Length: 280
Image 1 (cartoon, rainbow, N blue to C red):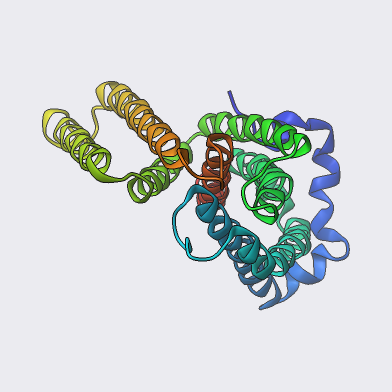
Image 2 (tube, rainbow, N blue to C red; image 1 turned 180 degrees about the vertical axis):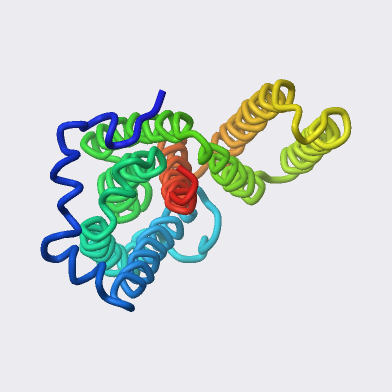
């Protein structure tokens, strides 16, 4: 099942087809350099917004700049985050006006837009208020977290439905694995590394030795099974690490750490979906 914008909003086909014939789409499309400049600006804006959000969320998880209170990092990052929001909106609209028909048929674009919405909800509704209050969540922030996580799960579903680009979800799994690696401590980290290395080794043997590269009838089920296996291990160890890290700390409950973890992954997924636009 395809979830590209053309499948969700078929009545907009005529309007989308006309976008690059009117202002501002036409001058952008006709320019030799303007479209490329906007693309660079869009990527930089996403990097600024996502990077600032990830830095704050890592602090809420208990990784990274632990010597600084979350509220101090919030004060330093807040301006950059809003600059990133404004930048991606402006450049995104201008790029879309010149490249509307291509994006209209892309399932990865749908995943990127839903992921972007989830990222903004989690960042503005959860990360900023939680960091401002050094890890405490109000009722409004908890509700925003619930909506943000639900939107994130919807973005993953849309990404999975995007043919040829859904392998990009391995970027999200890898990011989650690395976050948990840094968050885990002591024997938990050792067991986690050993378990993940064993899974990776078995996966490589099955997909490169046991089954041939073109044996999709076996490779697809194997890849899907191992993807779910990696996710299960990452979530389990991440939950254990978050619970242990929260004991005896005033800053950051398990809920805060879990939402911060989701906020980081949603930005990775949004970037991955944008990377895979060329394939779907």
